[in-house]
Amino acid sequence: MLIEFTKMHGLGNDFMVIDLVTQRLELTKELVQLLGDRHLGIGFDQLLVVEPPMRPDVDFSYRIFNTDGTEVEQCGNGARCFARFVQARKLSFKQRLRVETASGIISLTTDRYGWVEVDMGKPKFEPSEIPFTPRATTKIQNAYHLNVNGTPVQLYVANMGNPHAVIRVDNVLEADVETLGKAIESHPAFPERVNVGFMQVMNQRHIRLRVYERGVGETQACGTGACAAVAVGIREGWLDEGEDIRAQLYGGSMIIKWQPGYSVMMTGPTAFVYEGVFSPDGLMAQAGIKPTPEG
Picture 1 (cartoon, rainbow, N blue to C red):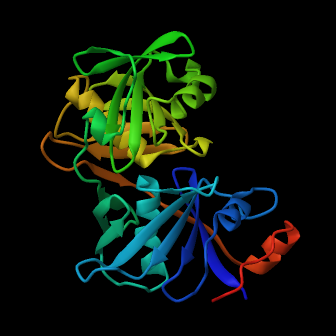
Picture 2 (picture 1 turned 60 degrees about the horizontal axis):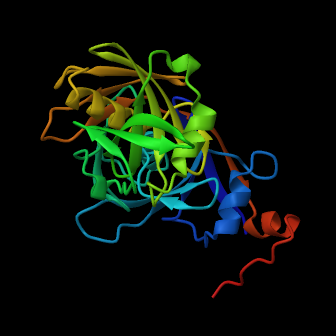
């Protein structure tokens, strides 16, 4: 059995996309890990899966897996690629889609230039909504001082369908993303782990951002991370509310807009890289894993 897939990216945040509307495949954690291996499989930051809708008021179900095989709630760059993919595969001819994710329903709108606007929903900031459960922390207004390996780190928290910690830095290029990001990502204060954003405010309508994504590491771009960073920046008065904010990442720039009390809107480009096929049983056999018999 061969499964068709498409490789895409949103600002360098790369995805393997599989249509499970017209194909059948049982995705196990081991298979996702193999597919995500850049040496033995296909390689990606996240695997995106298109499935038939589970309810009548949405067009598709949208599932997301990290390279470690864990399923996650949301992926903003992936959502834009999802919209372009279902149109290219002729699974839908709508310019505006309603898609169900593990964290709720999102709306995707494609323009004639191939850019996609995503209604990411309202950000959440309460610790219980992240979830964020520090045993001992100091809170000053909206900022938390978290003990990370004996060092207090000031951060802000937000949920954009998935959990984010945001740290404001003077120079994002000099930020210790690998070490500090990894330590915070798996910190006990974040029971579901967390994506860690390092934000430099250039002016009130421009930020630079690097993100250490949970279960992946630093990526070229992170859509939900950009939304969380901009929402925090507007909440703190560093950025203009209700205006287009340019979020600049390694892979390029996207536009984020938020008016408190409303949804965060994210707009950005997508790109198709290539299409291919793979054999699930062949991959599993090469790795010495016995395939699960189909029921």
